[in-house]
Amino acid sequence: MRLALAVLLSFGFALPLAAQTPDPAKLPARDSHQGILVACDPYQNPKRAKKIFGRENPVKAGILPVEVYIRNSTRWPVAVKLASIRLEIVLPGGNRDQLASLSADEAATAILHPRPVNPEAPRGRLPFPLPGGGEGGKWNKLHDKLQSLAFPTAVIAPGTTVHGFFYFNLGGQFAALPYSRFYVPDLKFLGNTQAIMFFEAPFAHAGAH
Image (cartoon, rainbow, N blue to C red; front, top):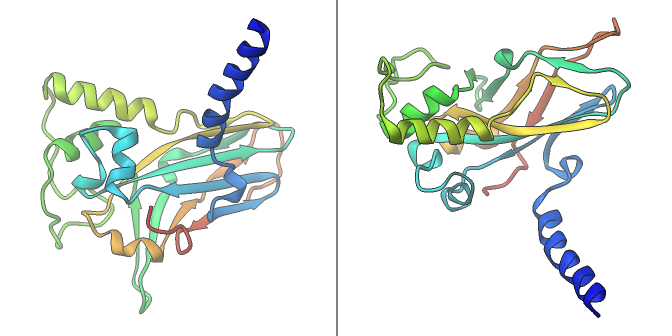
């Protein structure tokens, strides 16, 4: 009976955990080719984001956290140039914009010191200068949490899936999400000269969650 109870308890705890991990191939915002899948889950709902990030919520500060999954089903490691990744916004009428992701330092400062967006500021940059450091324990704690949740590596090993968050400062303009896409322009195989095309995962069908 003890063995049977242990088995039942193990299933009871395992099933909710499994249910919390989505299948990247079923996420609405995705792109795949050449044995590689890039899938995205944008967090625009403050309540949903709070469950992950806690009280210091990026969404309430106008920042969009995007959980990104990259699956490598090939025989070779894949290197991704993380610094080249952009949130690309194409508004009706043809206006196009690209936002670089924030580092954990920049995101922590923007969350703790939210400020209105300056429409004259160059796009893709923070709309305010960062302090020179010394933010204190609250900033350090938030920074460490954001860093621990961030996309962890630039190399995806064969047969593995890596996931983590990218942070984009939308200045609270989440209405632009249906016109946005996650753009990954620079990937390469390690040990294989075959070129890899860019990836575009559109958010149009991602839903407001």
